[in-house]
Image (cartoon, rainbow, N blue to C red; front, side, top):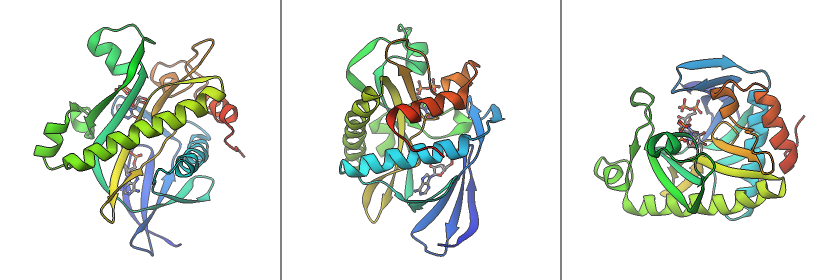
Length: 237
Ligand code: ADP
Ligand code: UDP
């Protein structure tokens, strides 16, 4: 598969076309951003850690019967994926309260959410990824009701699979974000699953081991990503 024209440079990944119209190459960079791109830093090894982490998780999800865009890892920091028509809505599941939910409703961080919640955010950095709902997503033409139903169903299935995986590593999956797209009329999981887009805490100490270490300037960001990777069995170099 030949890498061709640069299609899009995002905050953390660069997207390239390939010689096959249905496939793209995602290059995971070391750039780490927070607050909708207001703060950006280069963190050594992040690109390769997230690429390996994502490849491992996508394969676990495929084994559980979830269709993803993942085809194969091409190098330390590149992956070959199916080219999706992305739906500009982020799907967030929360098992425990944290982040924007705590800020918005004044909840205690770590409060269990039973059953887990499901939220939608419009993917738009300029607007700060505002919260939206199904009605808006349909009326604004981002997705159909049927597509939203499928996205919600897959997101909860991902939660069930990954909660178990992290639990075995002594970790809590607090919340996470997924992005979906359409491939040949089917809803397919796209983008990435890595500590950049989820919250993971140590079960005993509640130590944060995800991107909150960067957002909150807690230090040892990539070391924490690597610890999570080791504890769930991701093969690191
Ligand atoms: P952002 O756009 O939020 O800055 P990234 O730096 O991660 O994010 O850039 C990756 C971009 O590629 C995102 O916009 C994401 O929606 C898009 N993307 C991810 N997977 C696919 C795919 N399989 N097909 C097409 N686009 C994808
Ligand atoms: N998230 C993400 N990208 C975004 C917004 C959120 O990956 O643009 C993830 C975030 O890492 C967390 C979950 O989605 O795991 C919920 O994020 P939240 O709404 O609490 O917002 P935040 O506190 O990150 O602003």
